[in-house]
Image (cartoon, rainbow, N blue to C red; front, side, top):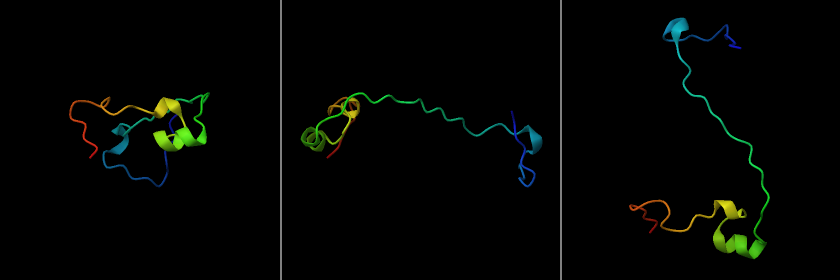
Length: 62
């Protein structure tokens, strides 16, 4: 269903397309690091830890 705002002014009239459509899937968190491991790895969630070198050949974090 499309809702039309009464006070909105569109630069291209009624024929404008949507700018973007975001989809964020629901994540199920099942694993956690203990506090010490989380501090060392930089994340509480093991699934978010990506080893250095996994981003690509031009990776440079220094």
